[in-house]
Image (cartoon, rainbow, N blue to C red; front, top):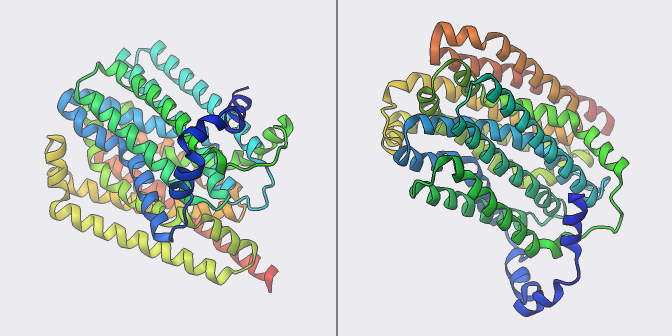
Length: 448
């Protein structure tokens, strides 16, 4: 039902008088959202959108660490880790699939219908998880509210993502990048403002949710003339076919998000909120590596898909090797920067001494580099339609984590969790690179 409502919102004719009044289609849309741009411009807007999405928790924690206690900061740190998992489930692995669906095997309306269902599933998972934690007495009431509020915020982001995917699919990536940048900057600023005035923490993120919904609807209204689509009705069978086809991607990406946050889940189970907060601080530079890698490949997914479909494997190899080189180079820069001055800056930002965690940070950074490499290979495996291998790789990594995290936490503390993070990401990377090389070899024989 929600998909039909939004479809009506996007295509409704009664907005034409409002558009004429403000000349939205005539001036604003043509001169800003849709004007011709360079790859560099797309890259910069993508940095703004993806960047604020990725560092939203870190920016918010700079205020929360001053206006609330360190236990609250630890709760927010874990809540964001859980919410990113909910975000992954809400997207259902469809974004890269949708953006690379050049022949439009599935219509936009069916992608929209599938996204509504996946978002509802994610919300259901959130309520079940929180009900279990409440019944077992593991979480305080404040923590339950924080987790629910941030999870809803990420479901809203995931719902908007299907619009962004459509714009990228139609080769209007600049509009998608600008839309995401506006949304993420505005929401992050609003949360920081609310936190600065010390709004009761159990309500803070609900206010942010309401603001995010209004902002999303406004941005969809502004960009809806770009969402051209056939008038094919939403088909229940097609929607469920799409959900089924993307299920391996969904499992793989959800597990990848879990793997990326294994340290936070382990600490949530076996350690204190204070340790959780400190881990969140030192993990910020680690995620910079993954973030930068996403900046570099996200604008080129459509191009990579074209190389694969047209059999231009040499150009695809070159792009892949370039990306790997960038990830490794970024890792070295982050390592040197943090050893020289980065950890001192983080200590000042969060009012905590982090200099004693240099070696632990280095281990985490190595794991982060392997995760970034694996995540990029995930994109290539999606383009080559080897999504089943993605699920296998993440399942193996998750199994290693679940079987060993208690032992590593009990015997070695935070350093044990850091080594575990490195190992599980190494397992993931090896599975993906072997699968991808085998796929390339098979494809090269077909195009010869």
